[in-house]
Length: 500
Image 1 (tube, rainbow, N blue to C red):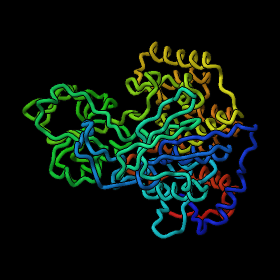
Image 2 (cartoon, rainbow, N blue to C red):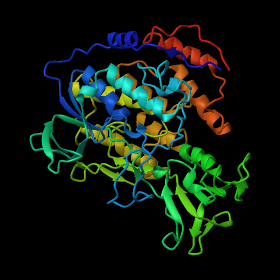
Image 3 (tube, rainbow, N blue to C red):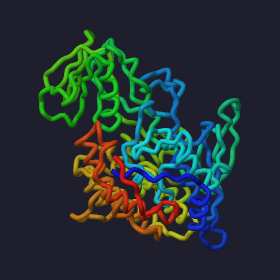
């Protein structure tokens, strides 16, 4: 396997990056005063793209550091399930051992490669831990001068449109102020993420079940599960990682997932204490958990790895923009609500994607539209596009909660309809979407190596769930990636060292 190249200095790297991207020339009076809500990966790249387009930017971040969901804390919420509206909210959903599930070459922004750096405390692995991602985002913010426009510790309590057409943003210093200060902006871009408000499985009988419940949002380390019988609900990446980790200390782990279709409980290959079941039928006052496969176990804990809900408690649109069964809408191409376009937009809603790369393209599009360099269709045409998409989903019996899903599944065909992308040749819906955004922005399409590397990594994750982060066979694609990276980082040479 080829190990990622290590960069020892940031200086020439930064100079090269900045020389590639001057501020774009724009029509007179096209600069806007824009508020960005959130300083995670989406908010940071949005701030950069807005600045590149010549806009004035203020980023509101309620925490005291940037990074959003990539800021790890051992703290958890007072309500382990995360449904008490009065709980003290912890915004991070990271667990201590988390490593990324995408290769770093794929994961980074298109023009700011996520390469390993020879600096103390850095993680050179191809699939690094969460701390390396936070370091990368900090590097990005420093190299592009974004930190100076971020207001840390500022909680946004209200965003709404005013009679003069501008947007009112009310915020306060989170630590000590009780009074919200009001400011006006030409536009608002919402980048507050979607990994804070847990979704909980609806389980018949749960009100009398005597065991404990927790959502993966509040999972950090496996120790609390020692010697326990655990039912874990979910089948996505976090469920895979957490089930294996807690199995090291738990008595038994029973995974309940829609993807388990055998009809009978099965042991997970390679494990003596992990069983796979289909969905839970009901739970009882005796501590029993009954599965649809006919089996029953007595459990101590139910762990919900069931995802998250979109949540914008500060946004007031008089019911025009809503969250309905986790569909944020109506939105044109997952970004613009037609009634408020282009002055209100969202970045980072799609899931089952390469998030940083997608957010970069969405924010380029928003910045160009706000400056007048890029045109949107009429409000009528945008609404018609949205209605056609929603109707196609309904006709295909696809739940609303999959509206922003970019996975290559039945949903992909409906999303492709939305983008006008019907083709038997598309390899991945998200790349069709990315390439559509790139075309709107006048940018080149996604690199072929990025597409193929993503597809291969997903296959490896399914076939080698325990080993895919440390074993791979796409060295040729790594070489192609680094050939592209050289234009941003001249220190990367073509001679990549081979190592095992």
